[in-house]
Structures are given as structure tokens and as C-alpha cells.
Amino acid sequence: MSTQDMLSQRYGAPSAGARRLLVIATAVVTVVFLGWLGWTVYEHTTPQVTSELETFSIDDDHHVTAVLVVSLDDADVKASCTLRAYAEDHSTVGELTFTPDPAQGRRQVETIRTERRATSVEKVGCTAPGQDRPR
Image (tube, rainbow, N blue to C red; front, top):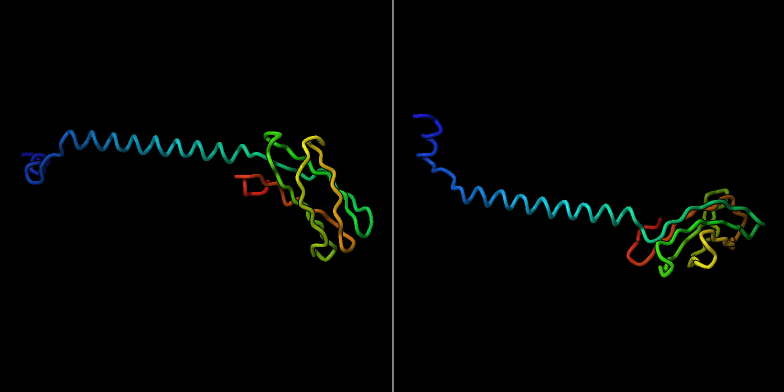
């Protein structure tokens, strides 16, 4: 008598139905996981709004002009974009949150009022309903 036969006699052989059920359950879990993974990848790679700081200029001690390139997935998207101006000591001296105007096109020219002379501008990013992470 072989070892396999001894083990089957002692513990019982697995039924064909239980094995089939295990294979089907594994296939269902795999399909559900792959569907979720595909949906997640799609949602994170196709945001409703994206933005990029193209350029900025320091106009005077209390004004900075920034050009932000905003791409809206749809003209009806209610987006909100934020720009922040910093002074030489890295403290925030001005901030502007605005709604991009689709009539202006992709390039949004905005003037930020500052409390003292700014040396740099940071694009915090744009958000939309359902897109909480600024891009």
C-alpha cells in the first residue's frame, strides 16, 4: 500500500465537488479583484482637472502674476485652483483660490495680492467634486 493510499484511507479523499467549488470561488475572487484594480487605475489616471504652473512674474511688492495651464475633462466641471506666493524667508505672503474660466481657455492668468514682496509662486493644484487630491 502506497503512502497516498494510506493517507486517503486515514483522512479521507477530498471530494470532487469541494475541489470544483474551491476553483470556482478562486476564479470569482480573482475576477472581482482584477475588476477593482482596473477601475482604480482608470480613476487615478483620468482626473477631471489637472494644472501646471507655466510661469510667474513679480510685479511689485504687493502683486505677483502667475500663468497656470488648466486642463478640464469637461467644460461643466466645477474646479477650484489654488496658487501660493512665498517670500524670501519661505513664509507664505499671499494665496489665491479661484475657479478656472473655460472661456479663458487653458491658460489662466491670475494676479495674487501679497502682504510683502514675494520671491516664488507654488501651484498647490486644482480639485473638483470627487477629486480631493490637488493636481
